[in-house]
Length: 66
Image 1 (spheres, rainbow, N blue to C red):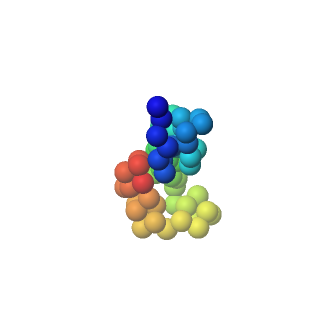
Image 2: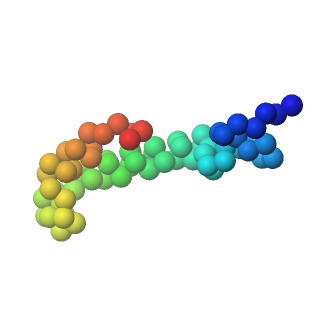
């Protein structure tokens, strides 16, 4: 017997928010890849996209889950 909680949908056995472990891992990998790409940008490209050195440093030093 499945008891419905605020985390799970009784009909689908999936979280109501659409959360999935696979989706979470894909999201983490995407963040990591974006931060690695940001790390490799030179000053000209950073200026072109309007990102300061401080903002870049802040972003690339975040853990992948944030």
